[in-house]
Image 1 (cartoon, rainbow, N blue to C red):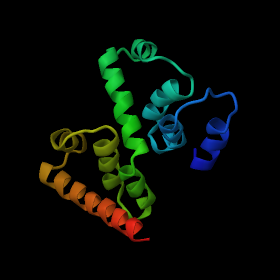
Image 2: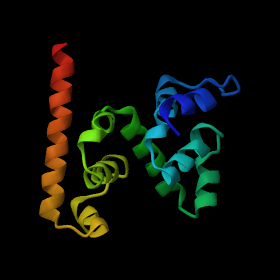
Image 3: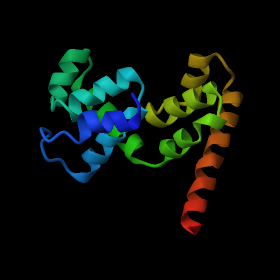
Image 4: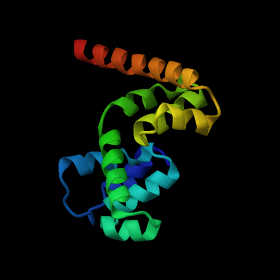
Length: 144
């Protein structure tokens, strides 16, 4: 589902309870997430389930669920992944996947190298390349 369709379907709905600005921004950017994480966050942001209820549904502890919700909200309301996502046409699928898992899911070098069956050196070099993209874009935006 693209951004506009997602916003029209969920975000501009008048049935949503009033939320603070951070939650509203997170709700507008939920479309950036992959399906399992999007469904997870929709339970919290759209349907208003509590952390305890989500933990019961997922079989995770409340602590793990809380940290996952906070981590994802912080990642999607920040600009780092958004800057990379905006340049997705110029990146390979591996680079996009590493960016997602590194920024949104906060996986480390070792976990990323095991997940994608590549060396930690390769993971570091790709993440350095992505970091250059975000710092270059940030500096361009500041000069405008």
